[in-house]
Image (cartoon, rainbow, N blue to C red; front, top):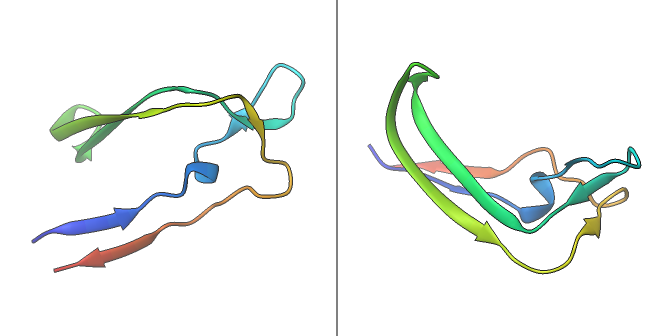
Length: 67
């Protein structure tokens, strides 16, 4: 099976030092497995640009397709 998902960048937020939800540039590591001790696939991608406050645009879900 192939699993494809579209991960919106505003779903990669976390609370910054000022306790506001932000997105920072950097490398995002992706790991797929049955548990954190049993990783089968890994990959990474880079977020570029400035730090962005996403207080009003946070995403919590992504679209997924299985084929």
